Image (cartoon, rainbow, N blue to C red; front, top):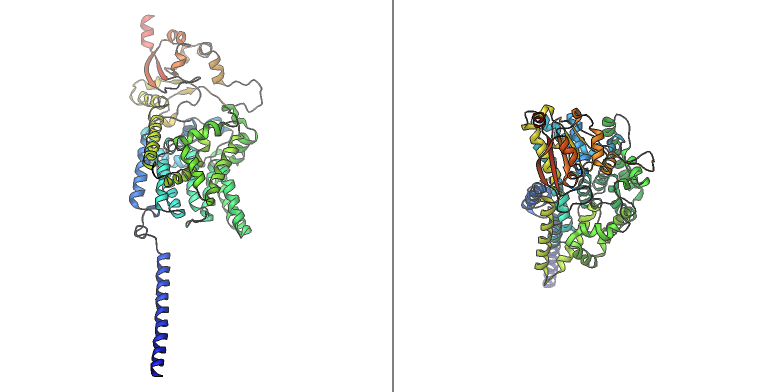
Length: 541
């Protein structure tokens, strides 16, 4: 009996020991779960990722910034830097979109704050005014890149995140756009960061307040930013159990706060209460007046726009769509939905679909991750083809309009007769930046092109009238020699047509700048600067 009792005590002691072991295991598991996944996060690493990865991404985007020395579209200056320059320095030019209150001051206010700080420090040189805003945009794009990597690491694993990250960094269109001061660029940055907090299956960083705040901010900056988020928000609402709480305690308060902030900012600068988001949607969507700036067939995004933006990523995107798990269908639906909605609008541009490009990189990453035999050739092909496009578009294509403004800067700061100088830019309107790239109150003029808001059937803007007969227009406009500008800037394609005026008015070509290998329409391959030589004319007389 004693032996049986002893065995019994040993048995219960064994059970007790095992229960202690289980408790210890649970405690260790709980500790591991609650602690950061690696020591780098415990040490306060940047953005929750390895500090070397973060620094590499920032360094890459800074290099990216300095290796993009070309112009893309007028909006990268006229809807941001030109407005900010006017806000801070009280001279410059605001386009019709601001007089008609179609654009809000929230996005330009970011750059105006930078300009104001530089001005107060006495460091508002023209080069800093040009590059500091672009560097700020580059840093924000780097943050978005890192958030995309972190999200994929949560949803999949580090290996998968690495391939998505690679696809994102080597995308030629991302390289081309991500450091430009475009509202589309900020929209894309906010979309990626919002996706990091969006409740995707498997995400550990989901936060409805943060993602909806970022979406609301993107909407304030560019109202069409809501388009990609319609299927995503609908999915979130459909899957949310507490639907009423989501609307009453998150969506409505956030929407109210951000919209109120936008109204207050625009009230300060417009001088009256203005809901610019409604004006924007009314003009571009309801009235479809964006067609004034060009229109394309309905299939353009599918046949040209989307393939061009994806570039050589396209076959990997298609391959990845068949490989990705079902939980990523919502991302594919978002891409297709965005393409379809924008296809309904007549005015189409490549940059409009830029915000969904990072979504496509997820599928491209899946494709690369599943490649075995052809992985190295595929990586080499992707990298080399995209870098070739990135460097060509960033350093060569359409660089003349920026180079000529550098020439005007030199005219302002190195010319002893600057007080009598004036410039007339006889190019398609908004071809060049303006005072943000000169930073001197030099009298300048360009051909105007506001759209018709009155409903006239045969409406022609100033630029259209000029190009109907440039020579006659010049003789009518400058019938008095005293009104002639000292400098004319034209595309090479116009030179022959107005040569009689140039000779009779004593203009001589003083500078030539390469612009593009692909001239079309009113755009020439080179830009010419003509200067009026008054002394020579006096000597002849």
